[in-house]
Image 1: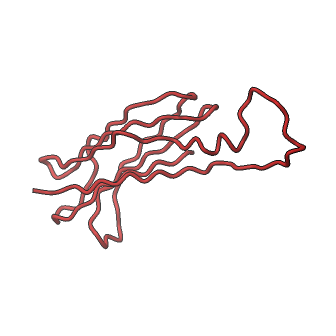
Image 2: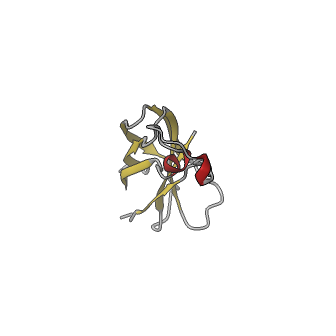
Image 3: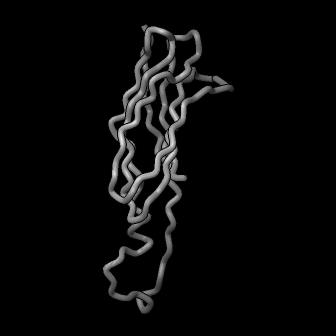
Length: 125
């Protein structure tokens, strides 16, 4: 029986800007620095092996920003020391505050090994 070690790696490229106290103005719009704290969320990640040797994974992507944004989720199953990795990717565009459930039905996996790791990587496009 294979055991999955699950790791979700979240990555974003937020823009951070600063300003002096004299430059600040009252506004209803959030500042760039407050938007930088709004990292995209990838929650509910679960991954498990299938009978055919591939893996199945699910997770939810949320856009916490104030503008429409694109995201890419990559799921891979690897062994320690693997130099080549096959993965499944999905791309989504989300309006501010929206979420989408993603299903990865057949994530390719190495044909042998009991120490396999399933990982998800989220990037903002």
